[in-house]
Image 1 (spheres, one colour):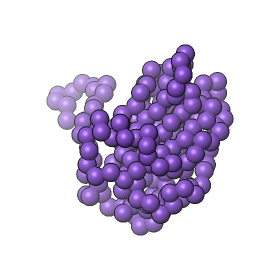
Image 2 (cartoon, rainbow, N blue to C red):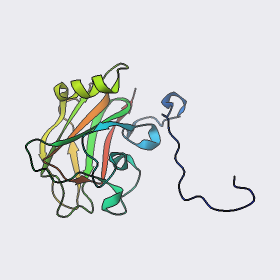
Image 3 (cartoon, rainbow, N blue to C red):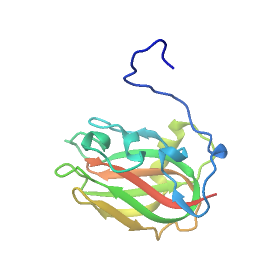
Length: 180
């Protein structure tokens, strides 16, 4: 409420969602939706766009509504780590490069794990040793890519690492499975 009148340009609320209080529908859901409590734990680069943007609902409005890293001049790749809802029966993975026509990643891979509570620092250090949810897969510009999960179908996950090679932008990221 604003008294007596006026305007608010931005409102930010910090914290984490208590997923045990959300009533999820039965069956397959988006385990990486910000509306369901998913959030970004860490990433190595947010030069042009915030990593959290990829968890937003709907289609990105423009490139600024996605996650975009700066061009790499050295070896390596860019990455981000997010926590998802505790899930399994991962069926479908969607990675959108919508609006990224010249600056999309060449390819990507996904790694996942189920971890009991650990510090963000411990999660980041262990993440490059997690099992692959999606091995290196080619991406193209301005497209919604859909992949089937064959590697960790029945395994429980609650953390995901997205690796993009070498750099670039992703509009949206979704993983569909069952909440545990």
